[in-house]
Image (cartoon, rainbow, N blue to C red):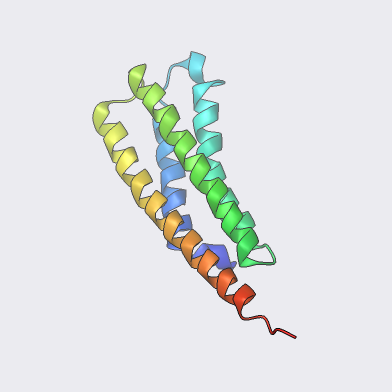
Length: 129
């Protein structure tokens, strides 16, 4: 098992990706190479960056990938607003996805803080000559 597979934020992110795919399946055909593709790519990017970052040599590098994941999450929300405005999704669908995104966002923030605290402690505990 890879380390990222144990992270609850990654697991919730996978659910979120499935949710995004489910709603985009109902979008009009004309959106399948535009908004659908943007939404699914941004959603997949959330979990992909967590996974990729977990393989980096330092917590500082991992923290940067978590930051990128958060940016992808924000991109999904912006695109969901477009879907709502275009009436491709109902308000209750939007609200459910928005609530899940808030949970993911909080989890990403906590993970990033934890990683930053870890690398700051490490860099501050280096021996002086």
